[in-house]
Image (cartoon, rainbow, N blue to C red; front, side):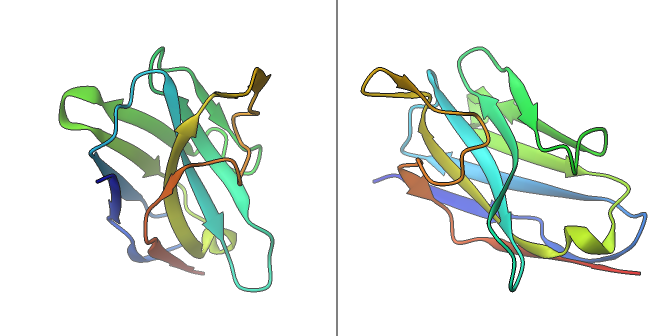
Length: 129
């Protein structure tokens, strides 16, 4: 049974840092992608960062580039999202999700927010200004 479990969310002041973790039990990471997606109340879902688990290529939304870093520990089946210089607009529920990089011969854009097979339950990040 595949499970994705996020942890590490919380409340922090603007300018602070948090590290989110995604434990991907029961899922073969290689050859797929794991992404962090966030959703704030009243806003559209946003793909924040994605890592290709086979080659470890990373992709970031423009809103977080230079502040967030996605990494993986393949031996432990963990994917991390290090978030630095947090802003109030980073406040959202953060989900990790896992899925393929290709579906039926079609390449899936790295920051796509829909085409994932598995989702975690989410972890709340609140940044106060």
